[in-house]
Length: 195
Image (cartoon, rainbow, N blue to C red; front, side, top):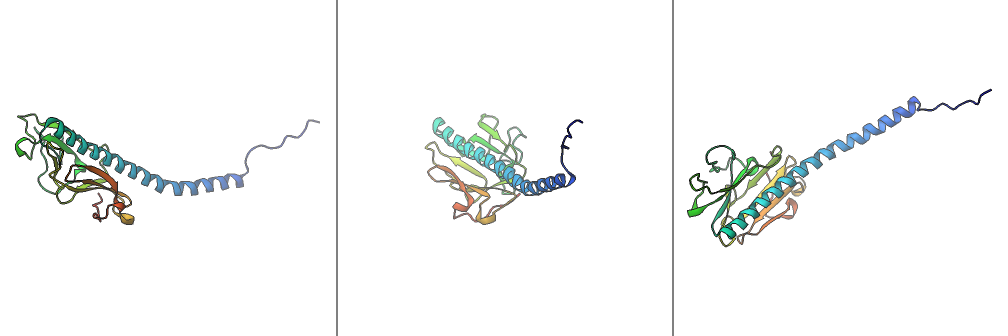
């Protein structure tokens, strides 16, 4: 008589317990994953904007002229594209870096003064707003100084929860230094405009 082989496989009870545990793990993981994606999108936009400001400052010094970063609702339309002159939109729709010779507040096609036109890689669910001095534009002089010192706030749909834990503050000093810090460490900014 051949030896009896033990049955292999899972019982229905074992399978149900495994599925229940998987459902519980997924239920906790999805909200955290969503927050992780939002935070990374915000960090990418923050880094892109800080890089743009540093680029503008470098160009101002190297070309010995004033360089401006301005917000634009439609940065890829128009010849040349225009800066927003009202405070309705934030920088999340895009920004233009241009040489502001003669104190120009708009890029001009005749002089070819546009250095870069940028839009955040993933603008949905973000807001980048400036406060006093930075709401429309940030300008750097040939000495690298800023004529638009102030703060800008980058936030996502989390807004200013937990004292700004989910926001970033970009500060531009009068000396032209650009720094980015978590919202909860910048005490003079107390809110942001969630998208």
